[in-house]
Length: 199
Length: 132
Image (cartoon, rainbow over all chains, first blue to last red; front, side, top):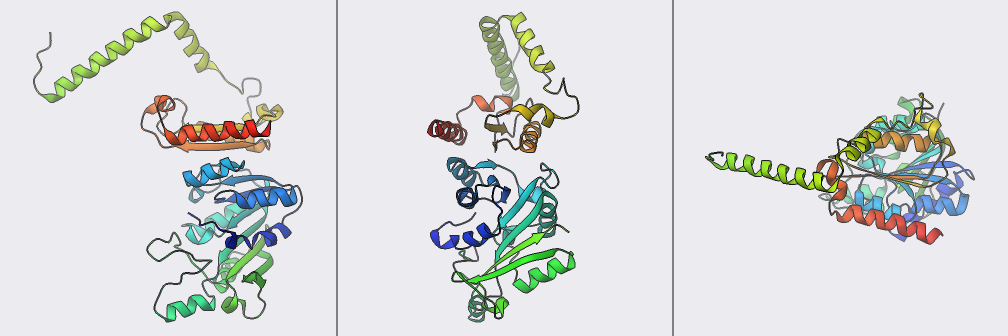
């Protein structure tokens, strides 16, 4: 589902900063397991991945990741409440059907939650739409006819969702070209990273 | 003797012959009483016998790494039961990977040639070998 390249890993250090040493981490839609291996190396975490796609699942296994093959749309029924220190959903939420359900499930299973997604409100995306095309970029690498992304959102949209669901945002960081964006992030930010905590 | 009319009867006859053949083969290769005994042992095996409450409690002392594989067509060991095992292992922080393989051959799927299945086992064993 995901496309992997060096360029897509610039959010790893941020996620690393938000991860506690030796914590138990669950990565939803873990792809080839590179984020979990990165966190294992830097923070000595105990990591588990969930991956639906069988080819990605096999890549994770080959990369020595403990990986469970299951469909996230069915929720996290096999996981006890508060059984993980951290649950991560990195660049995957926009391709999911049941957004609110999975956020609630993450908040149930994890003490802390990290969600990252490409900001559809980024000016380069708006510009491409103004030119008459669906946006294609580093963060949104798919053409309209091959994209798995069905629920793209802006930073403003995600903030509203958190407010409506009474979800507490502990930290928020917006990145463009590996740099943090503070001014008008919904317009100038390419990638959004959120750390949420269970109330 | 059966008088065969039409394709469906022919098919029925062929499958009966095949069942007969498989039955004979089985009877030659296995001792019937041993087979009954083994099947019973499998049927009555209950890992939670000592601890009726939870499978998780039974797995507490496990230290090894796990690879659990289920086949979607298997009724004998269904994916949902395998998921129970995975959940109980996860409850104990035990290293576990789980694969659910799409299959059509029922319980016998694990005997069939399946590239994905073989590659999973191959990769898992390679990782064990590397870690030694």
